[in-house]
Image (cartoon, rainbow, N blue to C red):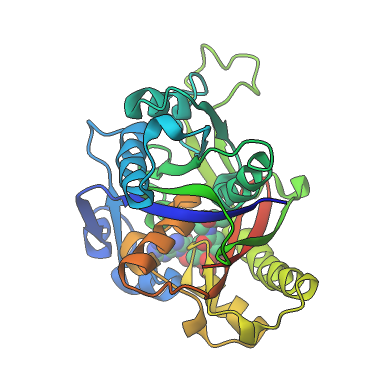
Length: 323
Ligand code: ACO
């Protein structure tokens, strides 16, 4: 079996930063409510001339430079998004492939909501058993274009961002050790973006993409599966939580992470958190967190980390990584 590691990371955040107080000027909400219920203070919102692909391209360039990999070396671009440039073709990954001149790569979009990056790490690791060239993973999410800005139950939760990782084969110790990825379609109604082709009149109807969420159901699901994912990865690799340096979870909500930490009986400080500054950026949260951790010097060679994703579908999973 060939081992695979993350060789480079990159991210992109739009410039415009919105504090809770700014939302409270037009919505029935407050900084106190949002902070106490979610842990979020700020979110970034894309400019009108930006797009999911433009953010992805910026993140991809940084990750490629960090890895020292040229675009033409890539065998694949695997992109996760719930907010593609087009709905749904051409794929956003094809737009990235053209822009960065990755002419020797295939380009594929994956729909797995907030678990997209975690899923793609495992899909890429499998692909690399047969193809030795590097793979670019990109997660790009422009949630500001699918949320109803008059719905205080959802619009305060999300932000825009893209993040990317370059994967290469390795013979060293640093590698993706294991992954556990799953879906549970029985929860399909908890979280959805309406506006697809399900309805017969979808072509002519006023059919805007709009996000709907049953917040309590998502909360209950998340705090149940986070400990399950962690325990499965630990057990089948003969590890305990003491062996894990960082838990890098999908950043949906501080209260989800706090409850999961309590159930796992680990200090909250073992979970990296940056949602207070960037909010929930769907599948971009995990690579965005990893890039920020790398920039802050928090990821050291030999450390073991577990990434955790969960989201619409329902989808969920995690990766056990030795850095
Ligand atoms: N500001 C002020 N009041 C609000 C706000 C807000 N932003 N949002 C909801 N409320 C009010 C509601 O109107 C309601 O008032 P009412 O009782 O008078 O009708 C009250 O708060 C309770 O509403 P709930 O929706 O039941 O609020 P809840 O306590 O469940 O908190 C939250 C909502 C924070 C979303 C919670 O359900 C949660 O943490 N869910 C987890 C899901 C999540 O974080 N999803 C993110 C995306 S999903 C993902 O990434 C996988």
